[in-house]
Length: 367
Image 1: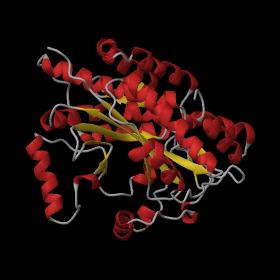
Image 2 (image 1 turned 135 degrees about the vertical axis):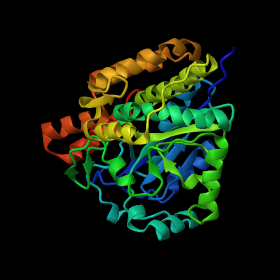
Image 3 (image 1 turned 180 degrees about the vertical axis):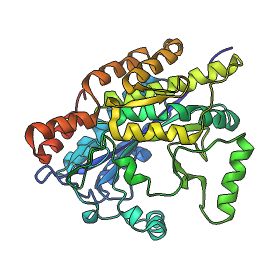
């Protein structure tokens, strides 16, 4: 049976930073306006004015995705440069305070702030989302149920937010702790079918909990409008290479689970409460902790589990043409996550401005 084309779409949320003060600074939508000519809808404002989001077009393979991710990063840096700003890639800013950051004027954001209040105003965090194309919603729900298990592994690789408002938080990803204040976040529950999922959505819409499926902010979701499964758990990673590597693993997981299903083999589904234990460990310790191997019912070093994950997808990466990208994960294990590297700079200098400088240089790495 021929493998479907698991298309990719990657969205990255960047920080706009004042090169003098190293604080976050509003780009007043000038970057977005400037990008309209060349990038059209690929560059968007977000709720806080110091956030700019870029998204690739639909890519048919990882090579296309890599080209787009690198191109968009270069473009957004040029646009920022024209405004006298720099672009940074991390899950939180090391010391800027959300209280000082203006909200983008927009009816949609006004509604979110009105409903969620301080949880929305303080949500000054930056993530990376990856869409993988799927054939239909039935397959999508199956994927959502199965892929939940791997979310902590992917998340551990991406951890890049150890600081919050000038303090070392003790977490490798504090972004996730900030975002958890929102409703309908975290690891989703299990759904029996697409109709089970759609009934759940309809109930929330009917009872006024949400106005559409985009108000479901889980770590993985079946997209309400596209035939994609969307991974939403990752921190914004510093290097474009890191983004592409993790996206390649996400695509490979979808392909692998699909391949198993087509051979009538099911991957065991674990309850959300167990997966949340691993997510917590990933947020706290990143790659340096231990996660639970539920099959063996024992703790295993996170790095070992990630190597096992690479083995698990090994038989699909050549078909996808992504071996080179997936193997970059080995380099990530070697150099440590963004959080590890930020903390190292802080230990050496004691200066969070130097941490920002490091983030800025890594954001431009390889471009």
